[in-house]
Each structure stands twice: as structure tokens, then as C-alpha cells.
Image (cartoon, rainbow, N blue to C red; front, top):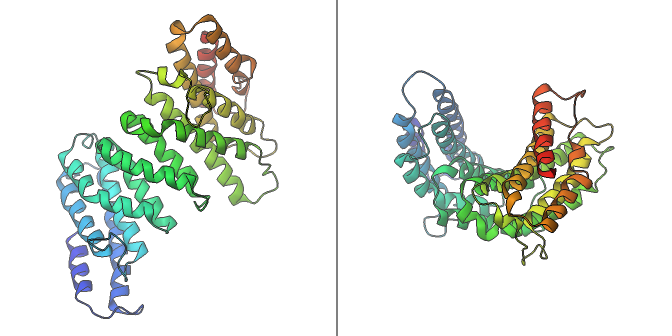
Length: 363
């Protein structure tokens, strides 16, 4: 970290800003050093050496100082000679500090991480507004890494930006899966901050589900097939975040919405979309579905069953019949393969658990 700042200060004192100057070379060198530092942080989380919390503060301060040099202090726009790879590596590094700290059990209430995110937050906003796919992905990745320590005002500011991005016709295709997965973390950890955007985002996921469920990608190239599977998995993961985020009070999911969902309960959208996409996943023809996608599907169905069983006693006779039709007669349960199957044993176990949960609701 000291080496990074020393080289960075030398870079500031260099007046030659041409592409072949020491400035450009220094930025490449700094990116490399940051990459090494990130890997050191990652490995320290699982080592028996000095605890990560000893270094979390200095590393975050270093990355903050570096990001300050890359953005205008007033406008927060990238400065003229800002280096994209440099910004990405600085964001990756500070994100790894948060992720490793939380995974080692020291992050959730850490004053260092709480204060660290306060300082980094303006650069997350800059990154989400960036035209660069790499900077955008790095920014929402850091936001996800710090999810446990972010306050609701910061959540809502980022949520509004992500909703605007999803609504935009210019959003890059490959970013949508990443956005949906980030939103799942927010739905799970920040129900209050997520709530104002919940209806809109579920409706958007429903719209995306309808579009991709109609796609026939059997003859497409490998990158396109990977994109569809990544998007399927991301939508299932997003639904899981919404469902698990409402475990303590699932009633808002069953109330008819007047917003973008045309009076249809959010849970009904989730059930219908899961059934629609699940058909593509389970009966996808000659293309083998990745295990991670099947796991995400079964997890979503399991959580649907949990919500329905949790609210079963409060449902009237007609409402219960309606939901039983959706999850049983309309074939949601048929997406759950029972043995024998080519699926790994742990996926079969998850499938059985989800099936049992749906059957419990039918009784």
C-alpha cells in the first residue's frame, strides 16, 4: 500500500501526460501492484497470519486516495488522464477487503468498514454512472461486497441508479445478470431500502423473463448460450433474494399491487416467471443446463413453497385454491426432477425438499 501511494505521488508530479509518458507507465504499474495487493487480501482471509482487520483501514485509505486522483473533486467526473484499469483495480481491492472481512466474521459491524464505505460511496456512484462496462461492473461489485454495512439512504441512492440503468435501452446486455444478482443482495439485506423499488423491479424481471423464455438459442454461439444461462440464474437469484428478504413478513408479496404489476400480487409474478423460465431450464433440449442454474431454480421453488406455507393459515379458501392451482396444476412442481436423474445428488436433495414444500401446501 505504501508503494502504491509513493508511485502515485510521483505520477502526480509528472507533467507529461502523453500516452507514452511516465504517467501512463506509472498507471499500468500501479494497476499491477493493486492486483497483487488484492490477491494478498484474499489469501490473508484464510491464512493463520496477521488478522486482516489490522490492514483493512490503511488499504481502504490507500484506495480512497487513489480514486480521488482519478475523479474531479467537485464534479466527480473522471479527470482527463484517468486510467480505466487503475480505477477498476482500486475498486476491486477495496471490495476484496470488505468481502474477506465479512467472510472471516469481522465485517458486519466493523467501524472500519462502515467508515470506509462512507468514503468510497461517491466513487461507487461515479462508477455506476460510468460509460465503461468494466468500471460499472466493478462499482456494483464493491456495493455488493459492502452490503452488510451500508445504510438505507445509500442503498436507495444506488437502487435508483440501478433501476434507471435497467430501464435504459442502452444498457449493455452482459450487465443485466450482474445487476439482478446485486439486487438480490439488496433485497435480502436491506428490505427497507429495497421496498420502494420492489414492485418495479419484479415487474422488470417478469418482462425480462418473458423475453428470454421465447428465445431459441440451440443454434447460437457459446457466448450467447452462456449469456442466457447467466440471465436465467440471475433472475432466479433475484427472486430468491426477494422471497428470503420477506421471510419475517411475507404478506406484501401476496397483496395485489397497483403499480407496474397491474394489480397482480408480486408472488404470482414470481411463480409464473419461475415456471416459464424453469421450462427452458429443465426441458432445454440438446443443450445441457449448468448445475448452478438448476440449483438457482430449485432454490427459488423451495422459497416459493416456504412463503406459501408460512401464509397458509391466513389465506381464505378461494385464495388457497388459487395458489394451489398456480404451483401444482400449472406445473411448477413438474419442474422438480425426482430420482433417477442425471443431476448430482445434492441437487436432487434440493429438488426433493422443494417438492415436499409444495406438497405440504397442497394438503
